[in-house]
Length: 89
Image (cartoon, rainbow, N blue to C red):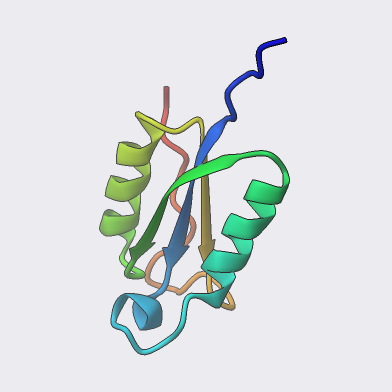
């Protein structure tokens, strides 16, 4: 019996601190591990600063290749960003 391929996913950490090298991306690694344990192939991890246009650009780019993108941010969405709308297909 042939094994079906794993669904690919991308993990996106939205954080000025991580993007600037001030903080460790422990939560991004944790999300990656959880997705892998759930059977996903996490083919890409990205870190993006907490800037709305940068977040939207990255999520749109990822949506072209990955059926699953898992964006996550630190303690809460910054006032400057607010959660971006998901890309339309």
